[in-house]
Image 1 (cartoon, rainbow, N blue to C red):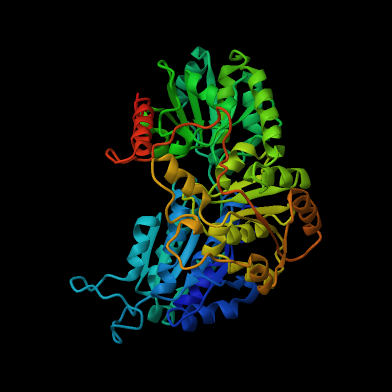
Image 2: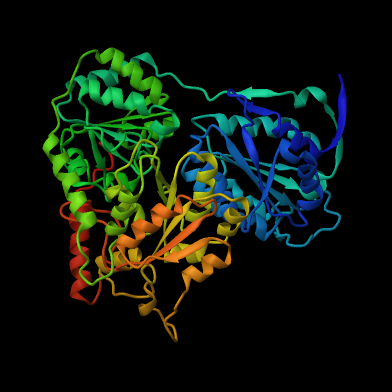
Length: 610
C-alpha cells in the first residue's frame, strides 16, 4: 500500500478537496475562516497550501460567516456545502448559534472549530474552559446538541473514519444537518502516514428514499376518500427538486396547495392552485382551506407552530393528517399517517396510483379575492405619512422581475413577506426555523454566491442590522452584489406589537420606550457606506422603487434605508391565525385580563394529536 506523510490538517484539506457531487463539482465549495492560535498554524497552513483546490475566504464574525455558509447550502438545495473554521474559545462558541440554526432547518454545514491540546502539556491553554470535575470537557461540547454528527479529533488517524461519517450525514436527506469536527490544535500539526487511496476522488449522490408500497396505497386511499384535501408544501419539496412534481400532482388531482415559510416558492404564486401562506402569518384563502380540510397532506414540512397555528388551525372534526417526509421523526408527528419517502418519489408514486382521480374543486373565488386584497394592501396610503412594511414589499415587488429572490429571517418582515410577496418559483429564501436576527446580510451574501444569476433583495429591520452587519464589508471586498432594504422603525417593532397584544405595556422594544438618556440618531446610510457599500436613504415609496432598479447595475452591495411605521403589522382583514404565546394568568390591568381571555379561547381550539 502506497503511503503519503501529511499533517492531520493537510490530510483533512486534501480529502475534502476530493469529495465530489455527481455533477463533477467539489461537494465542499470552500472554507470560511477566521484564524486564531487554535487553527492558524495547523489548518491555516494546510488551507494556504491548497489554494484554489479548496478556497479560503475570510469573514468578519464567526457566527455570520457560518450564516453565509448555511444560506449557500439552502440555496444549493443541500447539494453543495461550505465549511467554517475558527480558533478555540470565543471563536468557536460564536458559531454555536449558527449550528443551531442549521440543525433546526436541516441544513448541511461543516464546522471545524479549533480545540484544546490533546496532549494537555500546556494545559490550560489560552481560552480553554476548565471543568473541575471532568478533564475531557471543552467549550466545543456546546456543539453536541446542535450537531447532527459531532466528533473530537484527538489523533490524526481518527480522520480516516470521522471524515467519511461527516460526509454521510451531510449528504443523507434524512439525517442532513450540521457536522462538527472539533479539531485539537496540536493534532492539526501532527504528521501521520496516510494511505494514498484515502485521497482518491469520491462521488457522493443524494439518495431518494422510496416509500413502502403499503404506506403509499394507504395514503392514496385516504386521498380518494377526502372531500376537502389540502397540501401543506414545506421545504422538503424544494430540497427534493420536486417543484414541478408538486405542480403536476396538484393540477392533475385538483388538490389546493398552501405554503410554509420554507416551502414558499416551490409553487409560483401565479399557479391557480397556490392559495398562499398557511397559519399564523397566513392568507385568508389558505387558512379557510386549512380550517375546513378533512385531509391535511404535509409534504416535507416539520409542521412548525406558525404553520399550524400552534395546532389550532386544522379545526375540522373529521380531519386526518398525512405527513410525507424523508425522516420518520417528522413523518410520524402528531398522530399523522407517515409516508417516509423522498417528496418527488412519493408524489410520482401517489399520482400513478390515483390515476385520474380528482378532488372536488376548491373555491377559486377566495384565491382571487385574496390576491386582490394583497394588491390593495401593498398600495394603500399610510395613516401617518410613514410607509408600512406592506407598502415597502409592494414597491420592491413592482421594481423587480421574475429573477428576484426575496430573503429575510426575523422581525416583522418574515410574516409580511410570507403573506404578501408574490413569488416566482424559487423566488423566496427565508430562515424561519430558528428566526435568527442577524442572518439577513450574511445570508444574502451566501445566497448570491449560490445563485449569481438571480437578483437578491435582502429585507432587514434596523434591529437585525444592528445585531450583525459586518459581512457587508466582506461582500464589498468579494464584489458580491445584492440589495439590502433596511426598514428603520426605530427599535424592535415586531416584538413591541406582540408585547402589547399579549396584554403588556410598551417596554424596552422601541427606543422611545427604553431606559436611555437620549434617543439614538443612527446614520445607517453613513454606516453602510463606511464599509464600502453603496448606501442611500429613500425619500418615499416611489424613490424606493427607483433605487431598487438602479441598484441592479452595481457590482457591490446596495443598502437602501427607508423609515417605516412601527405600529403597523403584516396582517389585515381575517388573515392570520392564533399563535400560542403564553400570557400571564393573573395581572392588574383590564388589558392583561382581556389578553388572557383571548389566550384561553385560542388554547381551547388546540388539537395537537388525533
